[in-house]
Length: 337
Ligand SMILES: [Ca+2]
Ligand SMILES: [Ca+2]
Ligand SMILES: [Ca+2]
Image (cartoon, rainbow, N blue to C red; front, side):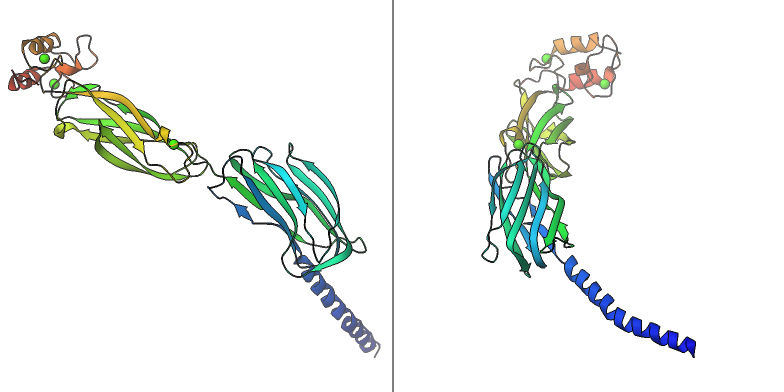
């Protein structure tokens, strides 16, 4: 009997306590919806340039009986500086405020106190901040600390959502052209390396085209090249279709431009020349004659790297100067440009 009584008492306590617990839970759940945040959540517009201004809002949502809103918002002082902070009227009220702004160290500390505590049920802007764009780069607009207080001075649980700003730099630069030969025989395939740099701060996809004089050799793709990284692509120029000339061909590389590119001049590089010769014209004077046979003879039986080696006497490009090369000279004997 006594046991039953005890159980009944316990049940009675639970019946009273449970609704309270549930109510407390509901209150907390409701309170945790309170959010202090930056709007827009992210600014990454490539049209924003150095020296431009950008405006963000500090917003609040789902809060009851808020008397005080206080926070420290940090940002990268190398990217942004603060131009203006404007208090906005909420439900007809402008709050009293204290401000500690430090653009050199990148923070805004502010305390807003409302005469009549606010109950806010929809996304509401409480502050407008205008930044000046100092440099390229990225920065969070980070709530390092924040406090919402009710009329009694008790903290209101809440979430914060940071903002993010990226000042986008887009620039492709052709850095280097490295032809394998400066003079060679018509018909050879010439590998030419072209090095291109993504000098911006976002990954880039673009094309690189290589020309001899104004004639296109080929176009190749660079896909998602990360910021600050180089890519080297090898073009194989089949010279069979280009006529041999006394004047060397000029080699030029062009990277396609990307939107909002800050410098398009450095997308083009003219670097290096390649002289295309008649097959057998060892000395490159425009005629295949006895002088070329003499030059061949001087290099006879040499291998690449030997003291007497002459790459131009190796007509068939097999790294040795021998009779096969003389045969090619004789095949083209008396030819001139
Ligand atoms: Ca460029
Ligand atoms: Ca010659
Ligand atoms: Ca040879």
